[in-house]
Image (tube, each protein chain N blue to C red):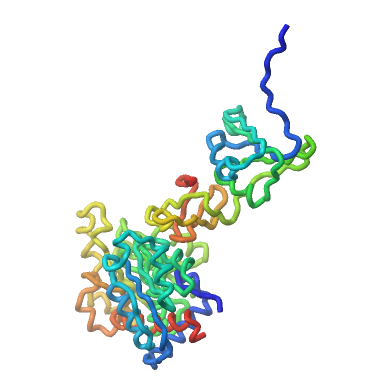
Length: 303
Length: 152
């Protein structure tokens, strides 16, 4: 069998994405399955992560696999100056699959070329984080009953947010309409707008966060990060503008759901949490099922 | 009367002449083609007048005939280069270089956070645009455009 890795969402065909989402649905119904019995999975986290690491480890555990690895680079041989090449070659001997998060962009593709076992990219710097995209797609399909022809509102940091970029590229496969709401400094980069334009897909840009959200099927919120601003004054000006409050949801569609990759700071007011349209915590749970599907798929246990 | 001394670059009997190389990229072309590591007779001239390029360079290599994919590797630094294939002192074939669809190990990725700028990884790009050149890194997936292009 040819080794398959998952580095970028583009590594998957549309059929494969649908198949993986179907598999994740099966895992949601029956999460405890001993499919990884006798298998060892390495989780190499060269930078810390809470949600991604825990949901991977939860997924592996529920499938009966064993986990080896480290949770940040300071507890690995990287501190001794070992190259990524050497770390991967070594770890490759100990396991059946590698899950890796690394701050350097392109590190996951590189690791997938060195390793003889499958590599799952759990985030390579600002580049790709395909398992996040898969759980976003799963959450969208589950709440909307379909992926086709949806109106997606992306809010917050649209310039640096790799999550929104990957989601945009993925949802473009299903004829989505996009609305971008971002401060001037954090607007959606030109290359992604060109991407949509070339596909003939519609998008609209806004700087005000108002009741235009009433048309949304999905509101995807992201964190506006202080460190992205060169001038702290600019951050102060926008930090409270892109806050979603319960009062803004009155006119939204009953089927609309709010997603957020988490962690949240203040961009979704806690008064939204009890609204049935708030979906971000369930979204995090879906990460376990989609990661179970990805692991089983890449190891060739489920096709 | 003494004959005036004349230094002449003789015509080659068999081989390849690469003309219309931008003068400031001559040594990059030599490096990319590995001409600094071969024993064949090579003559080159540089800072020659050119109507099109201002200053151009020319290389004559005896007894070497390049494969198309090899010669296309110089397209990034000498996009207007013309090739004359010489056999028996005659030009038997002319060719131009063309930017290939993939560039391996020649250009540097512009992204300072790219793995290729941290470890000894051979760079690899997909050519997304040929004129002006635009390269997409196989690793970090960022675009390196003509303006930011640098040769390793």
